[in-house]
Image 1 (cartoon, rainbow, N blue to C red):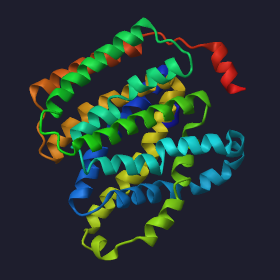
Image 2 (cartoon, helix red, strand yellow):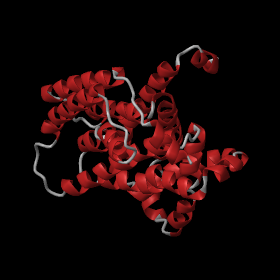
Image 3 (spheres, one colour):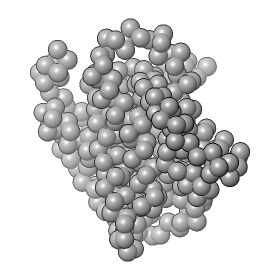
Length: 310
C-alpha cells in the first residue's frame, strides 16, 4: 500500500517526502544522543549501537547485491563509508561532549545545503541559479539569526566541538553529492555505510568496559539501539539518498537545514533548553530560504556530468 501511494506521487513530491522524513529523524538524533551521554554512555558506545543496529540487519541484503557493489567499485564504496559511516558517527557524537545540541543543529546540519552548493559549484563546475543563490542567502541569514542566540554563551572548549560539527556537515554534503552523481541506489548506500562499518565492532568489544556499561538501564540501551541503528543509520540515510535521487544532491541537502528547528524544539522538550524569539525568527527566515531554493530550477553541466561518469 505504501509503495502504491508513493507511485501516485510525482518524482519531486517523493523527493520532498523522503527529505522531510530524514529531517525528522536527524532532528531527534542530537537530543537522544545527549540523553545517552548523560546516563553514562560514550561516543564509542553510541557508534557501536549505530553499527550493530543497522549493519547486522543489512548484511544479507548487501550480500545479495554484491554484483552492484562490485560494479560501484571499492574506492567509491570507501568514500561513501567515510562520509556517512563510522568516521562520521564518531565525530558527531564526540562533538556533543564539547558543544551543546543547538550548535549541532546550526553547524552539522544547517550548513549542509551551503556545502552541497559549493561542492557542485567548485568541484563539478555546476553554477547555481539565481534562485538557488537567493535561497542560500536567506538560509544563511536564518542560520545567523538562529546561531546568534545559540552561540551567545562563553566559548570555553565548545570551539572544538564546533569544528567537528562543521566537518560533519561537509562530510554529509559530500555523501549526498556522491550518491547522486554515481547513481547509487538508496538502500545500497545505506548497506555500504552500515555493513562496511561492522569491523568497528571488533575493536569496540576488545576495549569494552563491562563494569561501566552495566550501570546503564535496559530501557536506555533499547532507546539508543533503536534510534542510533535502524532509524539514524538505516531509515535516515535511505530517505536522504532517495531524496537526492529524486531532487538532486543540492536540493536534497536543503532538508537538513530544517533540522536546526527540529533540534531546538526537541531540545526544549527533552533537555529543557527553551527556544527564544530570535531563534524562532531564524527558523522562519530559514524556512523561507528553503522554499525559495526548492522553487528554483536546477541547472546542471551536462558535459561535466558525462565526463565524471566515464
